Length: 73
Image 1 (tube, one colour):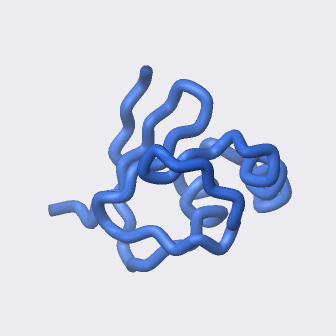
Image 2 (cartoon, one colour; image 1 turned 45 degrees about the vertical axis):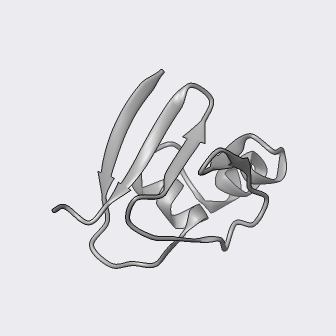
């Protein structure tokens, strides 16, 4: 599994926006389909809300990529 730390400047950030920021998806539509297809885990739980708000320390898994939300500290 690949682990990437993604630095976010302003929290909270919506899950769909975070996936675009992390360059996992090209746009919001692609993020919508990934999330609706139960392919995204947030803190080890399936998440189907594109508007789910993430905070520093949250862990998002898509495919074999683990993305860690960070505030840069």
